[in-house]
Image (cartoon, rainbow, N blue to C red):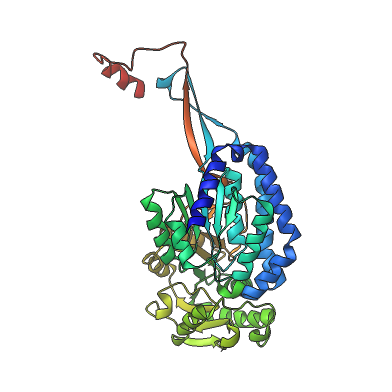
Amino acid sequence: MSNIKSIIEKQRKFFYNGETKKLKFRMEKLKLLKKCILEREEEILKALKEDLNKHPFEAYETEIYMVIEEINYIMKNLKRWMKPKKVKTPFIHAISSSYTVSEPYGVSLIISPWNYPFQLSILPLVGSIAGGNCAIIKPSAYSPNTSSVVSRIVKDCFKEEFVAVIEGGREVNQSLLSEKFDYIFFTGSVKVGKVVMESASKNLTPITLELGGKSPCIVYKDANIDIAAKRIVWGKFLNAGQTCVAPDYLLVHKSIKEELLSNMKEYIKKFYGENPLNSNDFCRIVNEKHFDRLLSNLNDGNIYIGGNHIKEQLFIEPTIINNISWEDKIMRDEIFGPILPVIEYEEIRDIVEKINENPKPLALYLFTNSKYIEKEVMENISFGGGCINDTIIHLATSYMPFGGVGESGIGNYHGKSSFDTFTHKKSILKKSNSIDLDFRYPPYKNKLNLLKKIIK
């Protein structure tokens, strides 16, 4: 597409004039972005309601609030992050000084998903601007109303030569990925992430992949059962389970399973009423394709609560499925919807081994009051990030990096990590001209023993 090529060329030309590298420019653009978002809050919330039936509170909490907090945090710290960092210089390089500089990559491509279509478009953009880059955002075609709002906000805030939004479906994605970018930031499925990585490899383009996977939630027998039930129900059914870090399956100790499930059942009713399909607080499935995919997961085990659905409205009520085994179909792929399979266990070591047989999850949640169990799980299972005695909230902070490991992702962002992700650390050693020792130059006769003494 010629328009894509034209935008990239304009952005690359604008980047090389050096304007985006200035602190004042970056701060002004972040401030302007914040202003535009706050002015269009109602428009954003309306779009999220239309795309996913998000309640204004949930939409503000998980989409707008996180972006504003991130902008505030980055603006507060950006000047310090941009300063060259002095580092030590080895003795062998005497009469030298060393430092690192965080420099922008250039033109970045941000491909965002449909499940948190505003937050996951704008949060990476905040990092790109903070890093001094130009950017093209490709929002999801599955959330057209929110994508349109993102496009309008960007057009109001920025010139196309700095930040542009290109809407469209798979064909647009393919066209974008065929172009050369200086950095690619992708959020989405593992399957599409592999395509992005393959495309990036053709130009050796650095990438961040924020993917997903089957994130386990472990409840040990000494957990506070009522609090665990409340927090698991909230984390799992937020956004109708269409959250990359949602608990994907529940591992509960055999001795407390019935009590935990009973409490979870009561919290589902408390949160969403006796008929969640009529709740204004519960999101819908994004489209018919995902709706049909989710229904195919209802054939395993025994439905403990839920299972009802309305295809015309794309609603599936919060569903817990009991008596699931590791071999069932539902345990093969990430669910990404309001269905929670339950597996009981007796020994913590057994489930640690079982989790480790599968790809590394994006998130892990553990409910326990035991330091021993906490240590056993945290030290022996690799995962992107997670919580002890809660779910999901570990990503809602600018003070920690968020990202996956292995098949659940490459790289991370949020706060300082966003700045680091969108910048290259350039290392510089400055040598004095006042003295130039002959030690390192040929001929090397009789110098080897002296070199060995220096490094001992």
